[in-house]
Length: 320
Image (cartoon, rainbow, N blue to C red; front, side, top):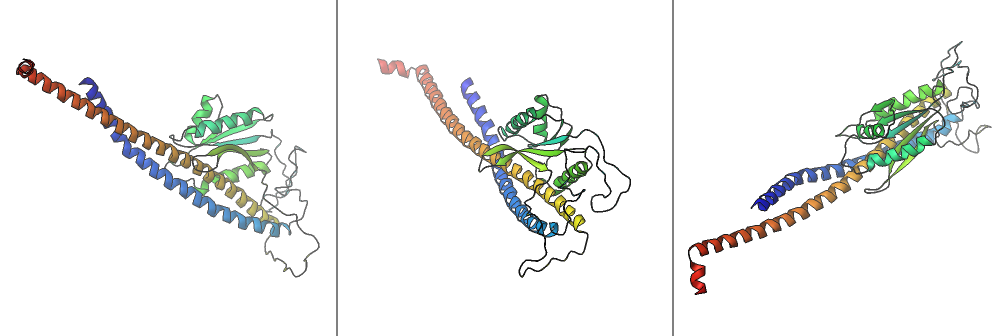
C-alpha cells in the first residue's frame, strides 16, 4: 500500500504540472513566431535605410575629419572636435585622452527553461574575452546570463533586464546605441561587440560575435562628377552631414534591435522544443504510472479476496 500511495502521489504531481508545460509550450510558440515576424519587418526597414545611405553620402564631403565612419580610431589620441554630432560647431574643445575601451554586450535571457541557451553564449563570450588584448567593458542583457557570467568570475560593469512577457522594445536598442555612439565619438571606446545566440531554425542556435560599432552599413562609395545618363539629381534641403549622421544612428539602433529579436527568436524556439519534449515525457510517465497503479490495485483486490476466502474457510473446504 505504501508503494501504491507513492505512485498515486507522483501521478497527481505530474498531472498538476501538465497544464503548466502545455501553456509554456503554447506561449513559446507564439513568442517565437512574433519575434520572427517583427524581425522581418525590421529587416525591411533596414533595407530602406540602406537604400537612402548612398544617396545622402554622395552629398557629404569625403574625407571629413569628424565623419562618424571615417575617424582613424587608432591614430592620434587627441583629435579636434570643431563640430559636434549633428553638424553644430563647438569651438575650442578637444576630445578626451582617456584609455580607449571595447564594450562587449552578452545577450541572454531573463528566465530559464531554455536548456543551455545562456551557458552556450557565456562560453562563446569567454572565448572572445580571452583573446582580447585591450581593456574590455563587459555588459550583460538578461538576468540569467548575468548570473552565469558572475559564476564564471566575470565582473559585469552594466546589466539590463529583458521583459518576461513581451519582446525586447526598440527603446532599449535606441538607448544603448545612442550612448555607445556618443562615447565612440568622444573617444571613450573603440568598438562594441555583441555576443548572442543567432537563430538557426527550430530549437537550433549558434553563439556568435558581431561588431556593431564602428557602424559598417553596406555603403557604395559616393559618385563624383554629377549625374550619369538620365539620373535625376537628389535635392537635400538640410545639412547632408547632419542627415547622414542621423541615418547612421538610426541604422545602428535598428541593427541592434534586429539582433535582440533574433536572440529572442532563438530563446523561444529552444524553450518551445524543450517544453514539447517535457510534455511528451510527462504523457509517458502518466501512462506508465497509471498502468502501475491499476496493476497494484488489481493485486491488492486479489489478495484481499483471498484473505476473505481464507477467513471464511472456503479455501480449506475446496482443498478437501
